[in-house]
Image 1 (tube, rainbow, N blue to C red):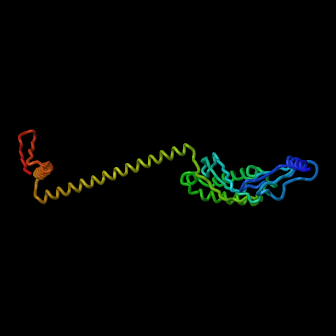
Image 2 (image 1 turned 90 degrees about the horizontal axis):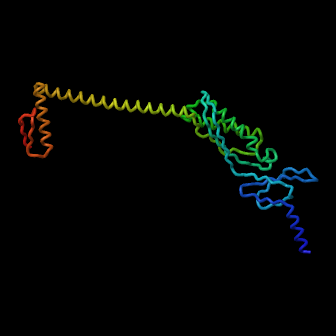
Image 3 (image 1 turned 135 degrees about the vertical axis):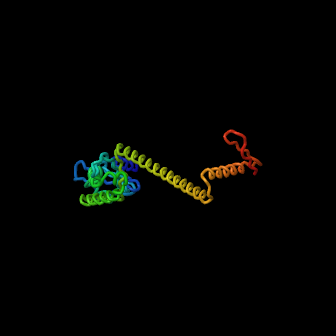
Length: 266
């Protein structure tokens, strides 16, 4: 008798399905009776533990944790007609698994949100120029806010049982031709700055030399020296400095390849 009971239990279990969702997941059961009844989505999802169902019942696993969805968009036109590539990310979280599967099915994002999300990105980018979007990125906060508000309104209007956790747009990339132009422009601007700094240094040196010449001429006039006498005096100073820097007791100077004309002691 006990053996028959065990066999009967095994037979019953063999005709059943079992579902045990992981943490952060729920399983929505869809009944599909063969003969009697209407079937359909069960009102209560399987949240924890192990649940046995008839073998005709199908279970759909729903991730209840925040999920990241990304879109990569090429040739998104800006207001000035420049095509840029754009990357956007939205993180969504399911709040009612049963309503989601009953009304929108397992592919709820692909069938209901993907294309509207892409359209919202295009419309937001189209209101701004390439420079403020892809180069200076000053428009990204405005684009981000506009898309998020439009997406939240769309979800509420469609009664999708999900909520927006975060929504961000990445840095837009201009075409390669624009990048090369920007690099060339930056190189030219840097060259101009370098030339300006070089000219500034030369001008400063010129002013210093002019000031030095004016000071020397003022000294010459104060000492009542002729230009030739001043040159001789400067030559003597130079020879004295050169001799003193050698550390030797005496220095001999040769003028015009002739015999020594001056001997200075330290």
